[in-house]
Amino acid sequence: MTNIEVVCIDDTNRPNEVPTSRWVKKGKKYHIVEIAKMMAQGGVYGCKLAEIDNDDLAPYQYFRLSRFAISLGMFDEEEMLEEIDISELTEVLVPAEQTNT
Image (cartoon, rainbow, N blue to C red; front, side):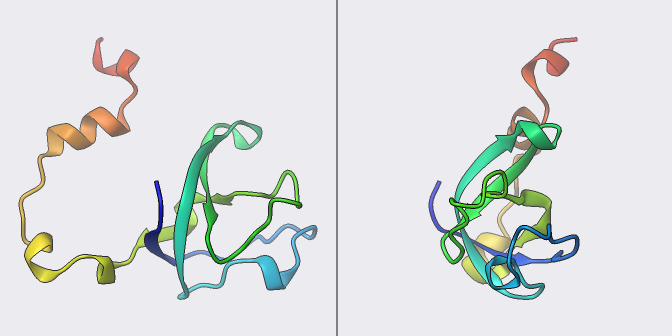
């Protein structure tokens, strides 16, 4: 997963251990280079950004994925008008054990 353009929609609750210069800013565009499940945060998903290197700030290397929205600038108008197959999204969003019950 490389260079997914997103916009920060939530820059609140910065941990004191993370300098403001290495924290996201609401309204600014970023590029996601990695996504991982953050077990220390209850299993929520987090991401690393091309623009901010926090690898030396353990356990704060990842930003909560819900802080971002996909930038519409990465899609052209024709792609945005295409129909989406919701069944494919359900497979991604619902764990397999829940879909088999």
